[in-house]
Length: 575
Image (cartoon, rainbow, N blue to C red):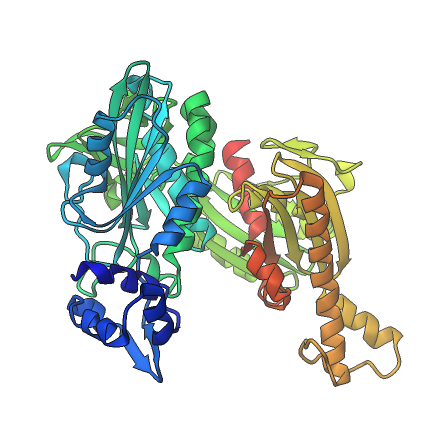
């Protein structure tokens, strides 16, 4: 490709509309030169351009970052930036530079628009087309010797997976460091090290599939889930995580990250077999990860550990899974005010969900008939009252362990004056929120009542607010106010009918409570720290859409179904 016009492609990579006159001005070129340049683009790039009325726009986003954004982002997190239009491998570039660099060189980061000889673990090549893959390498020096860096690849995989999940891509990790979407590979990590005097410098290569040709069926890509994803946001999120995690790893090793890693470990609790040189060397159930980064496997001969290197992991066969005799299988219950929800769990993985109204719990009975075999425990969270708890327990063949709100669990301290009167659903929403955010967060539940709770980044639950839910507010207006017993309309910024004014007032009350709590928590933890918003419940989507645009743009907002269930799952697996 004509080298001077890489910047043109990078500017268009966001998929937004750009006036061609503006593009020409930024690049200091004439419009005919831009037209000529476009004819030199590869066919899969040329076909993406749409031109209309002096505006250029690509039909999809590309994994290319403009140089000024790349440089600014890298320096923001302490890296010296180096952007290459084309190279063999960014890992090779940094390794060559570091061999001749003085000790204590500042962290480097190298990003390439195109790599002609990208590689992964075990010497495998990394194939890609221009714009389809985010590829970069960075260096970081550790005081730990090389022998103690076995867990580094796992920490990097965790940082990338968490970033993707925060943006809406449900990435998991296949030990040690493959990024997966179910059975399909989404990305990979390659780490190579150089020992220099009393420290070890690691070169960390990261490759993530952003989009894929139609004919590729054995891999996954971000655009298949998020059609308008911006690679710049992904890149900045990964850098922010790594800038936080790498110094912590140097201080504490892998131990601080194991719980988070196991939550995203795709094969945790599953039967797998390990291969070396194409031959199976072990088979068993994954028990977890050791502090060294080794895989712990429960085999027929007892527990064994395996380090990375030339070992490959494959899921066990369906027959293996059926024959397993050490499964942990349980039923989780979320007994709310108006309905019962449940989830079937095996070895920490949710197999399926169900729900029913209290006046007809036959779906639960039918579900038990289909999936109840082998269930060892039933654990629940209830706000529905004693009578309904007994109703639920009466149709299940095993006793239900109802969990209350607690003074402390999983490192979260409860500052409610009397935890016994604190709603158990609010407590398990907080515990569940840690699957989606490690930052300070406002946890919102939109059910019969709306609860708005504050959790600091240091795991202190400060308390929160309770207000009537949408239905209760509407009922109060209908019963207590003349001429308002009518159906709700839709919320508007300036409602001009009574039904719409009622809907607007109800929604403004909920959104106002969220914005106020966010401001209070921000003030409590200090300016500059992020405060995320986690919303669950039947009205979650409506609330997220009604929040002020500037508030939505400035903050991360996550909508999570069944957050109580995830809180119960966290408690059962890790308490």
